[in-house]
Amino acid sequence: MFDFAPDPNAPKAALYAALNEAADALTRDESDGVANMANVAALMGEFLGDTNWVGFYRMVDGELVLGPFVGRPACIRIPVGVGVCGAAAKGETQLVADVHAFPGHIACDARSRSELVVPVKCDGQVIAVIDLDSPSLARFDEEDRAGIEALATILSDRI
Image (cartoon, helix red, strand yellow):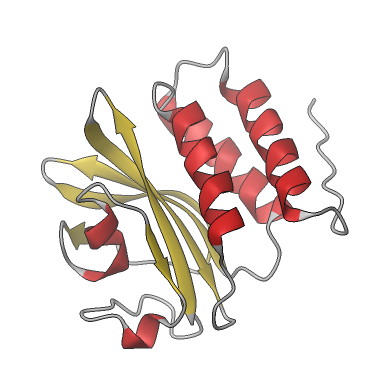
């Protein structure tokens, strides 16, 4: 059994180091991508405060399809290039302080106010995105970006 206990008072860099260490430990020897995404979604839900949705969208036949997550029910399919997740599916991290100011934002959960979406790439191709939503404006910053981009690198050949 794994028992990862994040320190809510830790600086962000230490929190992400602990999150990524836990994610690495959970996924290192597991070949099932869905199981790995499910465990990492649960870890993100435990480690990352002030979020109302954390999880994955998988690239399937040229569109994003809902993967494991923690939060309220979500949009099932998102076209590449549409909304924050669809923009990230083109290969670039999206750090959005106010989702309502983002052109074409898809409001799966009306409570979401800010979002961070990081592409997961394998052999140069986007295979999934990691999506974090918060009910607070400007919840995510460059430290969050760096931490989740490091997580995406860990997962690049495990999902």
